[in-house]
Length: 283
Image (cartoon, rainbow, N blue to C red; front, top):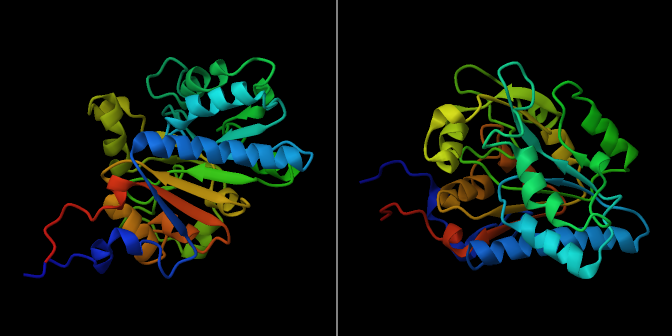
């Protein structure tokens, strides 16, 4: 019986990315993926240093395990990151569009302090002014900073269950109509989070969705697409289907990450279990 499963769900691991501009890498498990992500972040920083300038990166909190590894590498190699700019791509907001407090269990700012900045030797760590989050009270600041820095060397990220990248949520079905080109031009903004995002993110707080804020501030598709490199990483079993939709489904604002796949320098690294076919009885 045909249940109407999309054809992309049948694409085997070895064929992922074929016919697209996306370079797909497969690695072992979560630990191997974190190591590879940290290595790539370090390589971007070192490459800019060799060119005689400090790097500018956009980074996610999710995946997360790469940050302590990168901190260790910076310390071991005595890599001077004082002038490196780290732009976190998003943060949760209160209902009044203020950053959630640092003591909130889901605060990305708190996470970055604990799992990255505080682990780096003070003489090597990015200066406090270079530890940047999108500010809901100054939404134009990110774009202005990127212009002053001469662009973003690399944007790192993951893929949400609905295909979002950063918190660029797809248009709400039945309520919003946004063309693909208009969606690509969206810049840093505050927005409501989708039900799908809040539900899957509740897994990190024991499944209690009421703890997950309803709003966020995010860098936009415009800033991400303008980055010289885009490096995506997926390490969750539930991403098996969405990565196939991103790579081989329609390129549409309804699946925001699909709009990245024609970027001139984009790669997607998958944990081996993410590359496996989704656990659906396909015949």
